Amino acid sequence: MQPHTAERRDYQRHYRALTAKADEIGWPLRFRTDLTKHDRAFVTKHEADRPFIWVLRDSGTHLAYPGIIDGVRHRASGYARMVAESFGAAKCKFFIWDGQKLVEYATADAADARMAEIEEELGIR
Image (cartoon, rainbow, N blue to C red; front, side, top):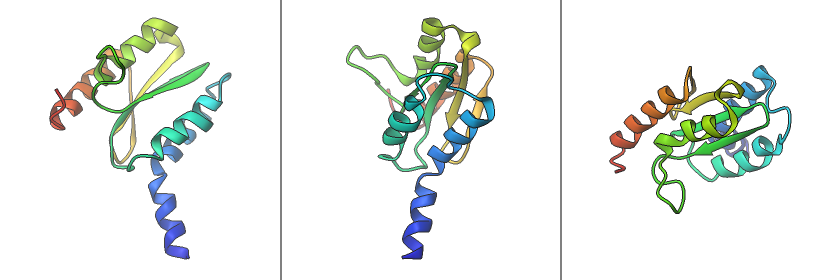
């Protein structure tokens, strides 16, 4: 029974990184279930070594895996900019889970550029 518990904790290391960062920054102040319900459900359906982009806002979170993210062919490599333009960049922090750790980017453009590299590395066109 002990190995299963250890494996499960390791499997959720990406979610633990998100909650630790959110706690450190003190966001989201509102819509906390974006993190505690929606992000948790989304990331725990995927292996922890799979990269994703994550935007933490004062009033919520946004998360996307590489590739097409909606029905109108928006890509994860443009996601941070879309969130920043919608909610204001000053109210956002931009991160990429690289499969091992959460990396912060100073701007939406920097996060999107890294996600574009990840999409290319994964052969996602």
